[in-house]
Amino acid sequence: MRITSLRRRLFLVGAAGLLPLAVASGFALLALVDHQKQQAAQSGIEITRALSIAVDGELQRTVAALQALAADPRVASGDVRRHRELLDRAVGARPDWTEALLHDARGRVVLNTSISPGAPLPPTVEPESLEQILRTSQPVIGTLRRGLKGTYRFPVRVPVFVRAGRLRYSVNAVVA
Image (cartoon, rainbow, N blue to C red; front, side, top):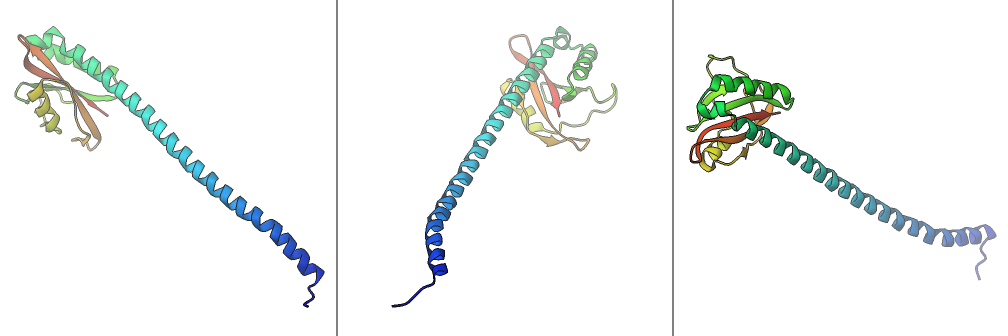
């Protein structure tokens, strides 16, 4: 029979008691990490949802403001010069708008608040949403594009109707 020292026996008893505790602690740590990952994912979803609601609300306010500008009788009568004054005030009141534009029923730029009156008007940077509003006569939110000044913006477009629902203009805000 083999004789083992007391020190070795105590070590084996201690290891036999600590090994299950170490394994259980490892499993608990893995469960905790998994729970933290799930909480982080849930928090990310909640933040994304809240931001989506905020962006949607801001876009609805922009569309409502543009619809109010589109209802101005000066634009319906073709008085673009006086309508420009109103658009300039609207751009000044909305810090997220960088400029306002007016397109005619053929898609040509008639007015751009960031360009001096009488100066040549640049082409439309994001023509897809302009084509869509001309085709559907419904408000359109365009895609994010790099503008002529190198910054990223997107247009929000609202139709202006004159007699019998015929599209006359498109009032547009370029949103930063």
